[in-house]
Length: 159
Image 1 (spheres, helix red, strand yellow):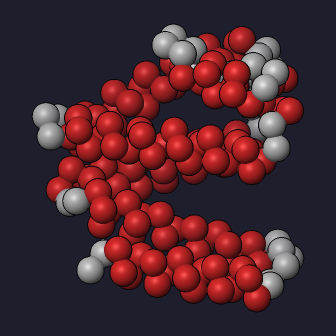
Image 2 (cartoon, one colour; image 1 turned 120 degrees about the horizontal axis):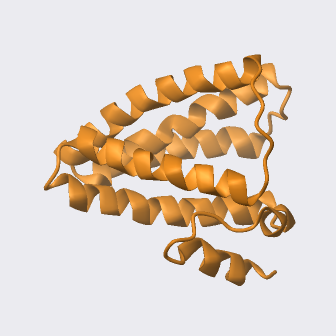
């Protein structure tokens, strides 16, 4: 399956995900770029809707429908149900994420996207540094410069 077909399937109404086998064939950079484009449009849609709804309602409806979609997807790809300590940790991370999203959606509703989104996306610095410190990921000049330039870009975009 070609990347374009996967992208087309991801955008089809009523389809929540592409086939697992198809997404396995995509490399992580293609998946990252596709995710980035789709979440960019999603964030813009959140801003448009937040003019008419409280950010918490937008959050509940978006992730409530998303949850149902994920259940359909899990059934479609035949993922076996498991429950262990890692699922429990995932639940805690989900609770943490919901609190973050309330803050984020409220910021989107109250502020200009051109300021809120760059600040929020500066979060990339934290896992990059943690990965270098705790996961033995390579520290290179280009990575360090990239983190510095990302921070400078946010500073410039938010002025």
